[in-house]
Image 1 (cartoon, rainbow, N blue to C red):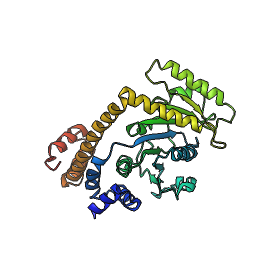
Image 2 (spheres, rainbow, N blue to C red):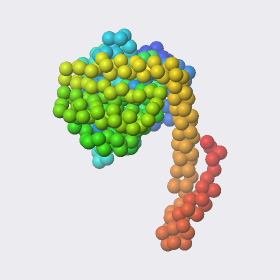
Image 3 (tube, one colour):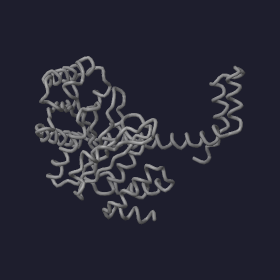
Image 4 (cartoon, one colour):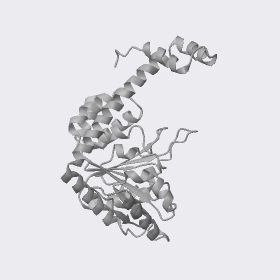
Length: 316
């Protein structure tokens, strides 16, 4: 079955791609084998991340951008991440409803994913699903994050180009300048630019960019309105210019190299976590050590060292 899934993905079979993504999301033991077989066929897709606060119109921007990308003859995948309820564990996955008009286009693959408790605006499986879509032959992969706050900026770990979406009603200049999310933008999009305050928002972003100093790439500020489609072409042009800059300066390969280094370290960390969890947390001696900490016979730092010294990492 594993070979059938891998070959199906390489042959462009949507059902096999969907099956692989489900296995990844459900942490199936076979997922690593599938990803290992697919990896030699990856590295061609260009990844665009679209992030911003809730209600900024990210889904509508993705919907409009899909139309332009398809006019260019490009095959596109969309990973739309929705928040998971901390109570029911479910997610609405409403972006499939918003992008329903593209459902019959065989060159567009839309996958909604719940965060399942993961922070940073993305689902835990996002990185692996990117590999599936890349091997599946998609030219461009769009990632729409959950509506994020000031520190949830995981999108830069995955995207070649990051678009930060703002609205005129998004807050004053101080709020813009202090937000960590502002530092990750390759392109700023002021959506709902037909609303009052759009000029002020653009000016505040420009001032922030002036204060940040001279860089090789100054993020452009694009005004858009998904009601009439204005500014969408300009947003696409900004993406193309940023891609040209990355490729021409060698930054694209450098950034992807850094991403691979980080991925390898993350995988090592996950393996060690799983081994420590299995050997320490589930061991008979763990609760007795916790009781000793509670009674102040031993401190947590000494206890942690004792427990780590007992871990056997030969299974890594």
